[in-house]
Length: 328
Image (cartoon, rainbow, N blue to C red; front, top):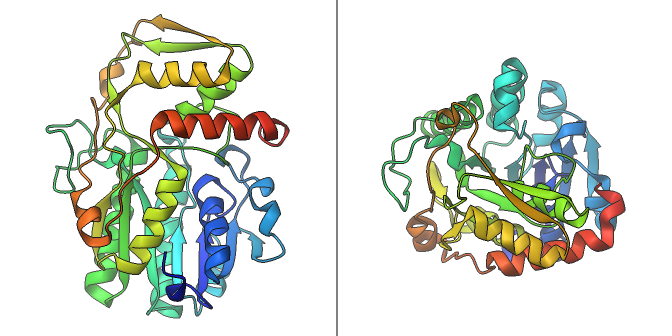
C-alpha cells in the first residue's frame, strides 16, 4: 500500500468501532493517517471499544450517531477521506424495525453525504453496500450490471444509498464510491447474535460446544470474504477507485454452506452440526447461490482476495479463543 496517499490525511470512519471500521482504522495507523472514529455504540451493531484499544491514543474517538446532523457536519468538515460503515446490520431486523432501518441506513447516510457537499466537497467518500441489493440471482458469477431487485428492506435501503451516491456525484461532482460486499467475517466482529455474520455466530456456538444447524443439504454457495481482504480493497479503492462507480468485492472461492460449517467445527475443535428442513416461505429471502464477479475492482485497483475460508476461520478461531471475554 502506498503510504503517501494517506500520510497526514484526515480520515473519518463512521461505525468505526465495529468489525470493518475498526479493522480499517487499525490498518490506517502505519500509513500515517489522522483518523477520527464515529460510532453510536448501539448494543446490537458490533461497536466494541476493545476493537480500538491498541490505537485509542492515536485516533480521535467520538461516541455519536450519523443521525445527528450537527455532529456529522462538524466531523466531516475538512476531511480528505470518509469511510461510511455505520449501519443497522441485520436484514432480519429491517423487516421488524422498518423505520429504524430507513432512519439509520437511509437518512443517516444522507446526512453524511450532505455534510460532505457542504463541508468537504473534495473528499473521497466510500460506502459499504451489500450483495443483498441484487435479490434473486439470474446469473453467476454476479457482476455490477446484474439487475437490482432486493428482497429485504435492508437491501432496498443499501440500494437507496447507492442511488444517493450516484446523485451526489452527478449533481455536485463529489467523489463517491459504493462497494457491494458479500459475507464478511473475521476478527473484531460481534459474536452476540446471528444477525450479522453466520460464520461468527457458528464459531461462537462451536467454541461453546453447541449445535450448528443447517437448512436443507447446505449445498448453496456463498462468497465469504475475510476482513483483511476487505480492508485492503477499501484502501485501494480510496486510492484508485473511479468516482461515481460501484464495485463488487468477493473471494472467487466457491464454498458451500456446509463446507463453511465443517471448517468452523474443525478449527473450534468442539460442537456438532445438524441438518434441519428449510423454514416456511424461505424462498422470499433466499437469493440463491452467490459468487461475485470481481473483474471491475481487479481492473481498476489490482485488488484480489488472498485469504481462503479455511485460513480465515483459523485466524478467527485463534483470535476469539484468546479474546473471548471481550466479545461473548
